[in-house]
Structure formats: structure tokens, C-alpha cells
Image 1 (cartoon, one colour):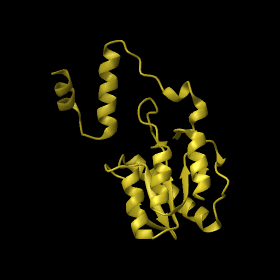
Image 2 (cartoon, one colour):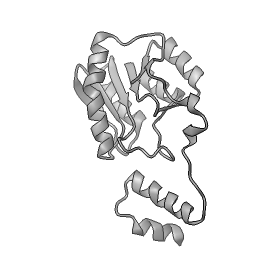
Image 3 (cartoon, helix red, strand yellow):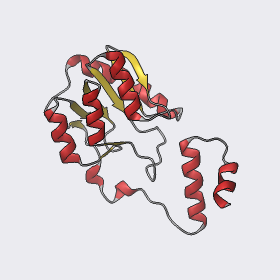
Length: 177
């Protein structure tokens, strides 16, 4: 009953509203929800090129073009990922998630796409940090992506070493900005 009551009290059904509602309920019980990356900062993306392959000039142009668009998506609490090619937006992430947006962008771009994944401007890192991992790299390969740009200091890299090895093998550039 408590969960139903909480759900009915929400002003909307956005991820942040739901998660903040749950955190609020936990805090009423004296449970403190802390930012997990505070204890494992080494799992966050660092600034700079993370893989062996550096971004090409056109890929950097796409990153610079797509970055503010991805940030605006986050500000609007729509998604955190945008797929770009030749300074045209091919896909934006919404409720379907990052992998579906990458696949859609890959179909439209037919290779050489650039994916930008950022934190929302007011990202609550206690429960909703951007994450990439091996599955992300597999999806990038499937979509024939050239590069992935993530927000340094905010994006969790799951199975970091394996993920970088796979990206290197597939010649996918990963850069933290």
C-alpha cells in the first residue's frame, strides 16, 4: 500500500520523480542513500581518450555538435544519449534506453556514427549515474559506431578493462569529456 500511495503522490512519472520519491521514503525510515561512486571513484570515466584509437577530426566535430544537444535532452529529463553523424542528429534516447537509441542511429547512419552519453545537468548520482559497459560496446559494434563520448567524472565504466579491450579490438574510440 505504501508503494501505491507513493506512486499516486508523484507529480509525474519521470525517472527522477519516481527515484526521488523512493529515496524520500527510505530517508523517512532513517536510511541514508549515498552516492556509490564516492566509494569507488576509479570506476568513473576519466577526461581524455580512453582507448587506443583517437577520434578523427570529423568525429570530434560530431561530438562538439552533439554534446549540447545531449545535455539539453538531460535537462528536459528525456534521455542522456544522442547519436550523430556528419553533424546531424540520427537518434535521441528516451524511455527505450541507450542501446535502442544506438541501434536506431546505426540503422540510419549505416556506419561511422558517433554516440554521446552525458549526465543530466542536475543528475542525482545517488541512484541514476550514466553507465556504459561491455554490452554498450557490443551494441556500438552492431551499429558500426566509430566513437563514443561520455561525461568524465560522471559516467560509470562497468568491467572497465574488458570494455576498453573490446573497444580497442573493434577500433571504437572512447573519449571522456
